Length: 193
Image 1 (cartoon, rainbow, N blue to C red):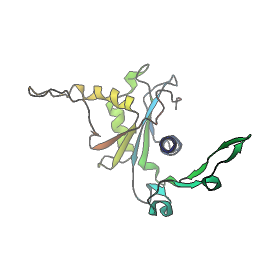
Image 2: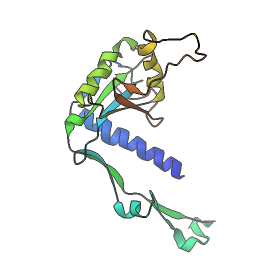
Image 3: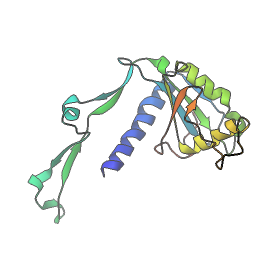
Image 4: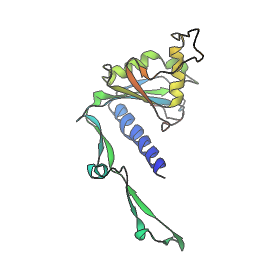
């Protein structure tokens, strides 16, 4: 249950905070997908007092991400319609401060099935520039499928040495900007922006 709560929290931060903030402030670049079968990449530059995570220091001061309290003192009780069970209340106070529209951008309408030509390395560069992330302070957040597709951008730069038994196509940075993968993005089903 807690893992599911964490996943839902991350999905909410991605879609209801970061991506929505980029869209609201017209800080987006489109990859031209138009079939409502899209992905996104969010680029964010965290800066204290402007773009940062928020939390309840009372909860974290106790070393807890969630404040959990047993209902009915932890004993069996009627949870409804004569059904007996145990219950608990789970609470967490976290959020995101969004106070600089220049530090959050998004590449939207990525459809590498129907409109692959619209998804280019230059557009990834553009959202990093738009989020002021060129100094290595940016973070690209994306679904693993988008990351997998981006490996084609590295293919012509791939180097294989005779003693290598592994062809490494992975990368952790895009020109100095860190990459974070999240399964909490929708999988190719975002509506057109």
